[in-house]
Amino acid sequence: MRTTRAARAGQYAALLAYLVFLAFPFLWLLSTAFKPPRELGSLHPAWIPGDPTLDNFRQAFDQQPLPRAALNSVLAALGAAVIAVLIATPAAYVMARHRTPLTRAATGWVVAGQAFPFVLLVIPLFLVLKNLRMIDSLPGLVLVYVVWALPFALWMLTGYVRAVPAELEEAAAVDGAGRLRTLVSVTAPLLAPGIVATALFAFVTAWNEFFFALVLLKTPGKQTLPVVLTHFIGAEGAADLGPLAAAAFLATLPSLVVFAVLQRRITGGVLAGAVKS
Image 1 (cartoon, rainbow, N blue to C red):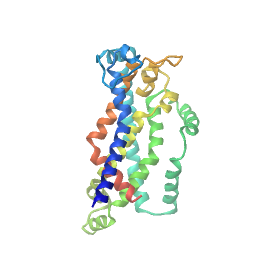
Image 2: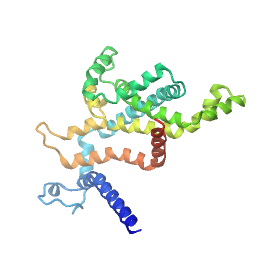
Image 3: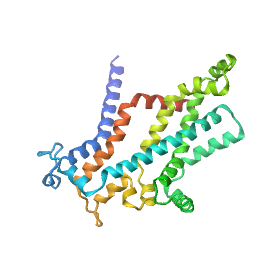
Image 4: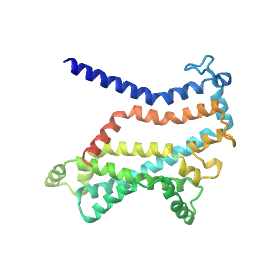
């Protein structure tokens, strides 16, 4: 009994330490966002601002077009998530239900697609978008995000389709339901948690993406939030720390809110998809 209690206490301690490790950057960012300039330059920084101020937030909005950049990020991330899920859902169903050499090759492509680094992809994608005349445009960036998100979306949704018993579809067919009716009335509701989880991960990945947006978007009015945040850093590397922290804190909030509100559905979708992958 004592050994069990000691092991459990050790697990809780390890979990607490891990949570503190994860929360430290966000809490320090939050503290910095409310500190006046004299506290930001102090040799003995404190966790809690001695004289909290909202001036950093005002300066952040005055110095950079944060609302426009946030709108660009929302449009790019939302468009990429919706299109990736619309393409990946039927493809994942075929890959899960029909095992052929072609679907096995597609599965291999999905796995290989996760191994390519950004640097190897940016030049081919840049040339393709240049030929399509989609450089420096949000639709071009959305297309890149869809290409980047598809392997993960296919992997997740294929595992989730495999978690749905094929016997349910067979029973619906015996009752006289056609293929389309079976997919809409039987399979789709069971896939909903996996679709939501996949779409949210695609959205958050696109929301936080920086490298492709930096390379492909040059017009200031079209740049996304991660790119605009770099404008708070001067040419010589000096950062306007207070406004930068305030803007970065605001940019982090959407991801945290999404995961906090839909935590159970995200977790359920990921686990169900991973078990059968």
